[in-house]
Length: 337
Image (cartoon, rainbow, N blue to C red):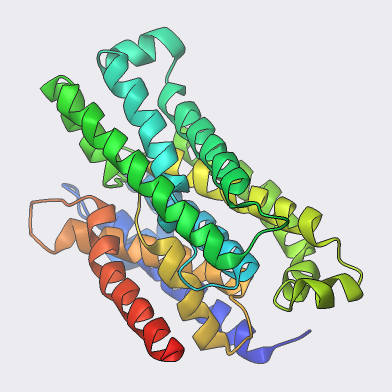
């Protein structure tokens, strides 16, 4: 269905994203003006500017944009499937599972360099991806009771999240101080030193999983009703729910593997997109655009808010998302009352 309001939101979000990428690419020890960055992106500029923008700075912003889009789409799917605005990969424990696996590799491998020497530079991202997938399978099995209920899924996910968070804390306590420092930076979510090797995996995941999710939009809309109504519309409820959750888990795990635990993007962005578009469920395409813009804008704030001190982007998204989580909880409590 053609929704002009959704198209306007997506176009405005894309404009903000391009502007944020250009601003982010212009910051650094060799400052480049916004007009010059836009010129380089359009194919102009001298060799020095093209090298700085395209090789050194643009991969960071693209990684942030792709990670934000992946997290937002994952959150939109989980919230739509569970019919619960509190359901997102970071609340359900999927991100914590990815983080626990990655921290275990960093800590038990002795150091990041040692890990890289043994299993290659993809060791930590692969561990994060595997950890997220295994955690999702565990949550699904524990939440299954002749089907999946939204509240049961959220409660089981919160419990698993608490267990995994405790495991991460234990790993950081027993780790060498240098390994613990590296793991902590990864856990709070950072786009520092991201190159094209980080852009490609999450880009490929988006290229495969987002079109699959868009093909399942009708199924996702049917799942907003009761299971009996969805079956009456010809939807195989459990099979469709499983496929959609696997898509969401894949997106969240790949995003976490690429940039660490960037909190609250998957929780906040789908709800903001839902209100801007005015739809009955979190829109996937608008969520992807707004998620990309939010992460890149948060990275700009993290790099500029405290002068020469650069914060991890996950700290900024947490500051923005935590109050919204409290708002959602309070609103749900008022609705039940």
